[in-house]
Image 1 (cartoon, rainbow, N blue to C red):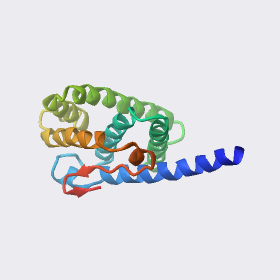
Image 2: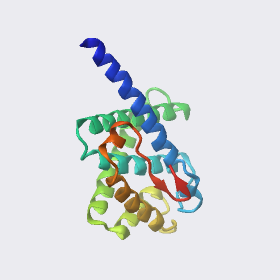
Image 3: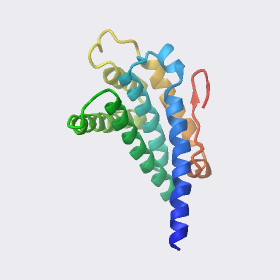
Length: 181
């Protein structure tokens, strides 16, 4: 019995690693940065990965237990990745928890804001929220985020059509501008 538990954890870890790698690959799709106005900066990449993860989490929220477990492990992997990135940027050990708390707050705030817009199918509101979050310093002169908002709504619709077997095996893929991931 105990050995089966460890095999299951190892199996889940491989699924989580595969799915997280796929999600980060989607977030790095050049089209988001070259054509949809997301800045190709550390914070721009954080924003784009947040968008992709939010869409994935919304899909797994209605999954049976295994899909939700995978989502939780992906959240953990995401924040470990963020922690590692902060440290690579030269932030000292004492400053990391403060930054992590701020970034976690940003992520969960975005999750709430985007979810409210997605639940209503409010493309304009979603574009406004994206613009405000992606360009907090220059929102008045920032590019429109309407293309990204449209993609999010289309991607969520496509994710809704994925079977549970796809979620449980860590094989969820998104249709992204400029190709499929």
